Length: 133
Length: 249
Length: 113
Image (cartoon, rainbow over all chains, first blue to last red; front, side):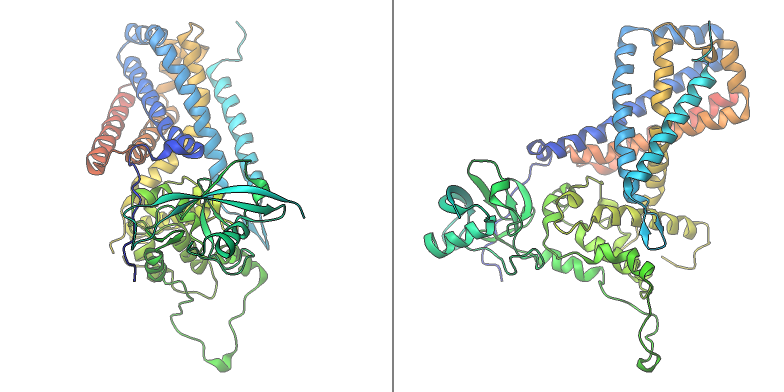
């Protein structure tokens, strides 16, 4: 039986600060906030699109405001962080066994990266990024 | 062998004398192939016999000597002094557990949670002895072999931020063991473990911080076990919702 | 011990995370280009309106916006808990509430186009 066990207190709000991987984990989690706000921005674009051309053009102009541009860069940083950590994590959840062999995680991750590049290129193509003029 | 004097800063706690833990420094002549455990044994044998800590096999198979070394959970028998930076080595008992004495922690919480996940083969009906043993192909063994390697050292619990913040969390090792049995072709106890595994304090309190898998000395990868159970439990949940399950809640 | 109902929000979180990982970087670059005044051809009003009138495009837009909203709501719930905010029920209600409102708004505007 324990005589007088001592319980070490852990700060509920600053526990992650003492370790680099914990700080990165918290940054990773909060990156989802910017992705969430970004799709709300897209939703606002849908609203403008549903209204009329003037509203839509006003929306596109608004996207050009300094605050929105700065926020966009934050979104891009967050979403890149999200994608990289997502592709690193997926092999752990998706364990593929063929016969007696487990497919190495890096192969599954590599497949995701290839798909990511191809999907991104497809989005650019559909959006007309590659069109001349 | 050449010896180099190193300094250990060890967190002490004597329940009969101390109200709270404190650091004690020891200077140890350290051999070039020593592990941290060797340094602790030197202290115990030659400097201060009151220092208390758990150890046994000295070869990373028993799981007794888990402790915090420079802030990271590790086995002291597997941590070579030459791999640590050239300054005082901070040694503390495993994080997230109450301190019993010095480097000895109270493991009761883990033992209780381990029992709750029913870490043994469960059969609906046992095969009679004269029908022979349960046969298993190498492929079937491979499916769960990795998760059998756990030595219950509790380094994963010490690295888990969720266990630190939510003491009721079942935790990495116990959940990885539940997965080990769920994946075992001889086992039919998946449903009977699900009440614990699929509870809020089971897999759902895991935030996939991955600290557990990073510190595991046996490369069990409990994080992967938990994420795989999240997927299978989610599929079961939807099946139950749509009335396609055969497994009731 | 009661089995959790977290699978519901977790499945939305996992789908949303997958959608976000594969699609959002490219989308964000496209809208960034628009912000800098170099909006690609699709973002022209007539083209975009025509595109978004199709059922397939509506399905994709619905999927991207709503799944990412639920992903962010669930992940921020965990993040805020890790940052010290203990009021989990309140955080969950607000987060999922926003996601739910966003879901309904997306349906409404997509049907309007």
